[in-house]
Structure formats: C-alpha cells, structure tokens
Length: 265
Image 1: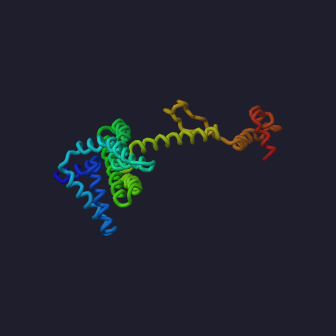
Image 2: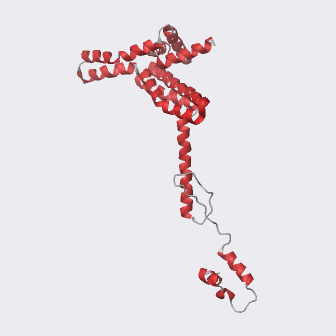
Image 3: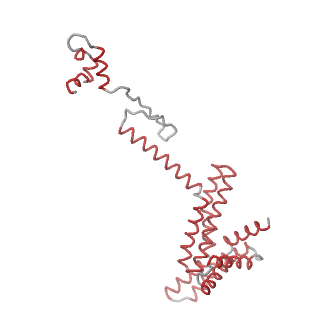
C-alpha cells in the first residue's frame, strides 16, 4: 500500500507540480550533457526520482498556485526589461514555456470532462472510473514525454515528446470512449448510406426492415420469385396442345410483352 500511495503521489507531482517538472527536465538535461545517451533509460529514471525526492515535502496545491499566480507578474517584469521585438516576444513566451506542462495538463483535463461524463452515462460507474484511469494514463504519458523531450532536445523536443508520449500510451490503453462512440455513429451512418444506395440502384430487391433511423422509413420491398423466361416456360407448358398460339391470346402475356420473348429467344 505504501508503494502504491507513493506512485500515486509521484503521478500527481508529474502532472500538476511545476517544480517537479522543472527539476526532472533540468536533471535530465545535465545528465545527458555529461553522459550522452549512455544508459539513457536510467538517466530518465534518476531524473524523476530526484524530482520526487526534492518535492515530496512541499504542498502540491501551493506549487500550482505559486506557478500560475506568478505568470503575469513574471511576464510584466521581463517585458519591462526587454527591448526590441525579439526581446518582447521572448518576455512573453519564456514564462509561458516554463509553465507549459502544467497549462497543458489543465487544458487537457477540461477537454476530457465531456468524455468522462459520457462514459459514466453510457457505461455506468465502473465504465466512468475506467475512463478516468485511461485519461490519466494518457495525460501522464504526454507530460512525461514533454519533460523528456524538453530536457534532451529543448522546446521543439518537448512538443514532439508530448505527442509521442500520448500516442504511445493510447496504443496501450486503447481509444477513448468518445472516439469509440464517434466511430460507432460513423459506421451506422455508412450502413444507412449503403442501404439507400442499394435501394436506389435496385428498388425491387428485398432488404431487412430498418427502423429507428431519423427518416423512420421501413424499406421492405417484395422480390420477384420468377424471371420472365421462367414464367414464359410455365405458360407454354400450361397451354401446350391447344389450338393456334395461346400465348397470343393470353391477356397477361400480351400486356406484359412476354409473348414477344418467344420471337426474340
């Protein structure tokens, strides 16, 4: 239980503690500069362990509040000290970049709320809890990838690492509930379109009755059981032995044009 609790706390630090994120990135950057990519997986582990040890006694909420609360004062201070267009732009982007992992996680949490609510409605309590775990895993993977990429390759590496981490974890935990639901609705729409196309191309074919769609139409057409050639052969057998050409005297045959098939065949 102690180990699980520590893992959960470390996960919370990873997602929401700017100090944890900065220490991990700085430690990995220094380690990679000194050792290169030798035992790189161990360097990553050591960087996160060091970050966890140095932040475990601090308040997570306090760290978040200080980081977000100091954003605009930090921008204002750097703006006054900067000169020129590049300097002013750097004064804005640098404080935002330092808090990018936290800002990204908070935005992702807001975007995941509709997905989680939908999972609770469609799958019940257990399904909703499972979706929370899946979303948390993807956020953790994205944040870890961002920190590793930023620590090794800089800002561009952080963005690439964030996308790579989310993609990798999504392959493990699977698609979100919203993605699966959208795919199911798309499949239903494609099936409806296929039935519509088939009916337009062959209105005499018999299709299963489809109900519950927005049109509320039942497509149930009667399919002919005999071809014109079979009907002609049956009538010839019925009228065999008669006088003249009974096919010419058959009203149905004359009106439908089947009697003419005898001359065409």
